[in-house]
Length: 363
Image (cartoon, rainbow, N blue to C red):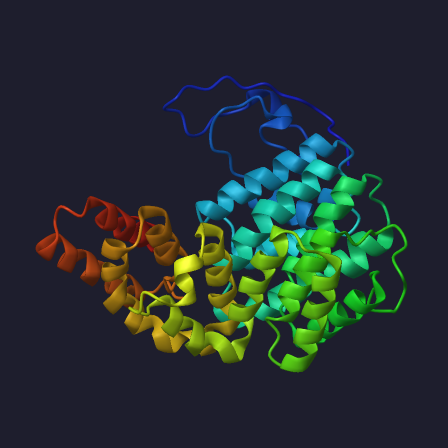
């Protein structure tokens, strides 16, 4: 698709809509590209007719800057609830298969797609949404081989590994780690996709999140990684793997909130907390972690008082239950905020954390 006509419109700060007299009587275009060339400074919305066109033809727009700008407008519309998350995810899945522009790919997999799945897709569709993205990247973008830039391929492979949530895909990761290369679902080796040491760490981290892969097999791949790398990355991966293993959730929770000063926590740095918490609090593990939600609200105030600010912040943001955004979920934060305002009104750090959570859940 190409731009057939450009019309410049000058608007005012308080003007929400505008008329275009020069288009009267002309045949309607295939689609409208609002804010073409990104010269406008405002929030823009794409009309419903154009969205339907872009759902099937966005990837055919010649100018990569235009494609990127349209995806960015979709992202803004998502935040303002002007487009359904499921619809935007479908557009991404259908139109990114043959995308080769580094900026479009980077924005889509760093911002748009993670935001859609995390906040705008029902929990029951979480795993299946990730399955679709995993297969889009593996059997679409990487198999098509249209990306010439190695740095972009690196980014796309990272996104592929991050989207692994299904047991059949976890099994593929085990095989990739053993082989040292990537194959698609048809068994074809992707010759131009390099598996870096950083990717090997990511593969092992995702394997440890699997429910059906035996612990012994997980330990084997971690032992192999240990032979390859002795850097600080290894400690990060060890922390994340231990807490990712579904059977370890209760053990790790007790460690996090232990009042014993002589546990291994005394030797942890901030990144150790971050990596361990990231592994523990994964959406696909919610059936294992939901039992601790009440205890979080009971104990987090003591953590705020007894831990250093940075560590306390890590506890709060990385362990708080955020899988549900209904009125009952918001009320739990509101009740704790009301209690804190009553009993500890000078604790502005904790009060602001709670207000931030409530605001995030309400939007």
